[in-house]
Image (cartoon, rainbow, N blue to C red; front, side, top):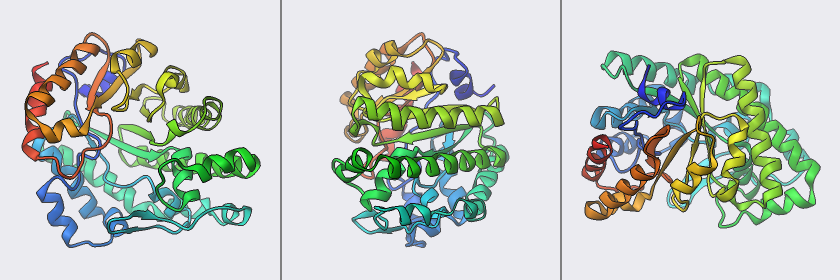
Length: 343
């Protein structure tokens, strides 16, 4: 069995499997060469030959234990018919979803057709891994968790605190729940399609889970993740799932009750303390600061060694606590892999 899947199955594999969030992207010159010819990011995500190529690039360069589908968490609202564009220097821009009419306009019936290019990317990557000799590399599919996706849809893009989102959850609970239910159902179908296309594990990114109060976290993060995991398990009993409730803090232990096989820990958390809150069967994933990789050298070595020491003897997947940043020197990533693989 592949090393990453063994870890997600509850085995303390050592040295641990390793991959990095956003490992396919702007820090790699080969990615920048592809991106230069496709100025529209949505077009890149929906052109299978290009999306498959950039998914495979970091595997060829580093031999990571997992390839994660190159796409974006906001491709699901795009597939639902919500507007989406990526503006240079500004990030994603979406129509602000603020009323019943906007929620009613979301069309789950169109998702299956619109995401077909993404499913073709999954098929191409799975075949490419075999053809290029990466037999022990796990293909990870993913989606944004409903709450985080709702954050971008309601705010119309990024935000420091997602105050409008939180305000809607309190002041318009019925409307907010309707949106969450729509996104949860669509996420289940979207992830199911990825499994059918060839994904061997799935990751649920809840990047803004930590902006919620504890009660709201339980209602909108834990409850939706539990539904998603249960539905996927019913359809595909052997699929492995990783949840990333970023900034969850002391609630990370409760999140494990969703039924995930692994929990991603963010940079700001002590990974040893987080591990102690998780059941022994659940793999811990994380949590090196991406800026430590930018710095490299002794700082990166010390941080990585501390993480490895804190989780030795339990199921673990080495990763970052957030996505790799564009200014990361590729040679620092190679040096990091040497540290991890030395155990």
